[in-house]
Length: 466
Image (cartoon, helix red, strand yellow):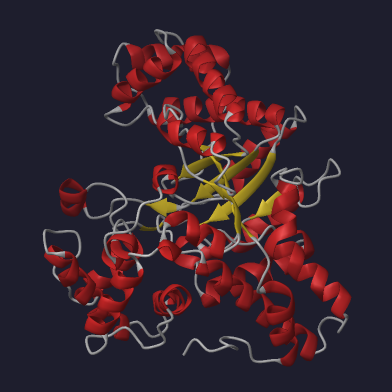
């Protein structure tokens, strides 16, 4: 299935992919990789460890295929879990997991056979044997995939010890940058908020009993992250919020949190809005990119949430209205000419055109694509979803300035998702050329593909000197 021209049906698409996109380096500006894994650079125990551990995409599919939880997240041994996934894959026609799986097998292990119960034993044995060598250690994978930059996802209280070690190790060529993810800082309506606040106090080395001290602690962590090479913040927003508030109101709400008093929904929204606005202005001072991931409905299965915790495959798409609160939030920051470069991601494809047109409201400052409609995310990260996101962006904005793909992954084998994206991009442009929708100008087409696959992100995240 994964042959040389996989997904490429026109001569223009084949030329664009093989001669332009294929060998470009990778900037993976949003993922959930563990920097310790890169620094330690140890062999993986098995393909099950590197492939199935923590991968809620696969877990979700396995459940739908009728696999029992024991062989997904339970105590079954690694071979049993691998076999369970092998049972699942032949059932996935039309699901991007089929393509991702076969791309990873072909790229890293030279295996072209469909993973199935019939091929599982041979694939397991060959993959595990290859994982014992140098070529499939974490750093070797990064080098073979031409990864130049990784943006991880990190809580403000993290000590970033392994980011520091990587920075100080001259033998590691890839730049591993923390991304500031302060979701827990503004989640004052969660039961464990006071526990998290204690972690912030430890990281900031000081008592936090007022809003001013709280914000100063966050600003201090932003400075620390910046010193460690941070280029971006990242925010997971289940429902976009906006409620007018000032420093006095935020301070009074924070005092109620300290006294462990109950909060109204309006107070929670006011605190989140005001605090995130202040953080955004600070990001702008440092030249960071602000990423807003909007629209998941999390932990739907309460029974399984109690058993397995978050990020276990029980999230789906939310349908709350987003246009007005997002507009007011961005506009409030822009009124002070303090809006940082911003990427808007939506989990609900219904909102694609909303995000694409919203981004157009806040361009400027001489920055190409200052506000981006981000790449197809999570449930949209598939063949049709990526095409629809790019077509919507092209219809409503300036496609040439798009900053392209990311993995959003916890697996070191997931960099083939950039290949998947690049093939889809080249196929889309090839279709446009051969239908007469855009000119057959090879020099201009080359600029599009090189920019979207690599150079636009390099510029956008300020990596030109790296």
